[in-house]
Image 1: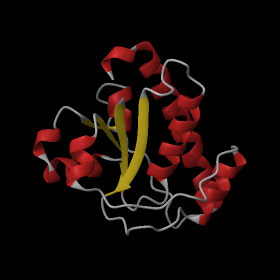
Image 2 (image 1 turned 180 degrees about the vertical axis):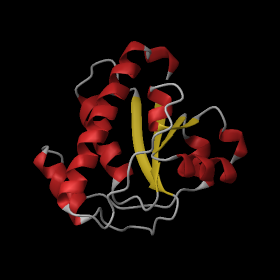
Image 3 (image 1 turned 30 degrees about the vertical axis):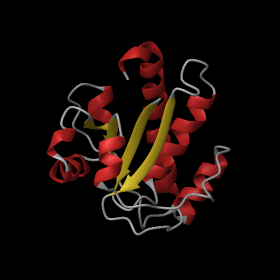
Amino acid sequence: MKQILFVCTGNTCRSPMAEALAKYYIEQSPSLKGNVHVTSAGIFASENDRATYQAIKVMKGKGIDLMAHKSRRLSLELVEESDLILAMTRNHKESVLLMEPRAEGKVYTLREYLMAGQREDVKDPFGQNEDVYRLTLEELDELIWQLVQKWEEEMGDL
């Protein structure tokens, strides 16, 4: 089973949303279901914080429940056990590589992994209103959908 890790700052907004979306789409994919495990963590996360109220609310609007999410801090163990690490920003990617330089080749920004060299970060909605979270959800939903499509096409290369 392939282990995929999404990384952001506090593991209360972007990475849990990305994780939940990936799980949602993987569950619907016969070729990926049971073959891909996704999780998330944050560079500066506190342990066991809930997802933000706004993240929970906008995800609920998509029919995805984030209420049970508990944040966790990125650890060397998580980096080592992951086959692929998808960071929300270039700074997150660099933080992973500072923690474990041998992760080079398996850590990318989400956009970089999908669009070979695309340098745009997924914007952080933390502290913003629901409309900003909704925009982040729309952005992540499109990216995660593309990600799952890519994995289905390249099942053996995950």
